[in-house]
Image (tube, rainbow, N blue to C red):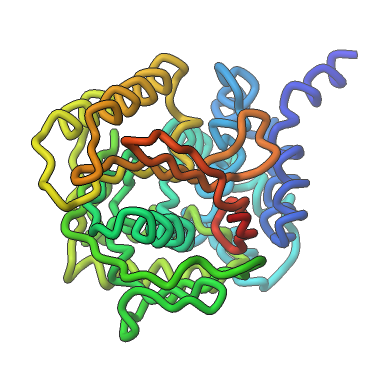
Length: 346
């Protein structure tokens, strides 16, 4: 009876292994399943998983575990684990179990920090929404991102985007973002960004080697195209370092919305996979601030919100656009969580 209870309590890794498998990452699924079976060898990590306060899925707890394993493998700290990631053997339980036993405290400490994916592919959905916005307003945009990580998506205008046949961005960029596209393409409009600023509780320096390793650890080990795209974006960010401040999203956004807005520029607040990490009060505060700022918006100084977020029941990821002064809210697309595909609904 006690064993059955324990297995049920530590089921989050196994549950997310099913998700990883469905998303086409069998290697990650195997890492998570082995982690589930071997958690008994790591008391600190097991206590963190079984005693997690709140929704472990919303907190991406399994992805934190996966990233810790990937980081250790990339660093070569544990040869057996590194060999597993190099596909030199397939003893998942042996390598993952030994890693848990040897680096229990490190893994638990890593998992206390929120994920830092800064997924560049999500920029395609944001850009598609910006094209719709440009068609509606005819104006360039000033971008404000909450939950920026190291700000790679603030550089979205510096990337090449192929959006269902609509080409936008810098055609010579080393960063190419081309999600699988379903439906009509977004409108062919110029992408004109006059400024881009962001905020994060724990911002990362895009120019540092430590940031590179942390972000690459969060990329699933069997998705090499994502890793290559991230490395290209980090290289570009060394020359064009994003403007990301350290701070809490709510007061930072309040300050930005209170600043004078240039006439003939649309102010845009955007966020991707961020709202799930805010508590209910913070989510309400963001919504209230935007509605109040929207009430002050004019056709010459419009305001827009672009969201790339899970639905409340985590059944799908939606790309949404709200534009003031009208306050019109639209569902533009449903998307794969990391931006690999976009189903355009406009």
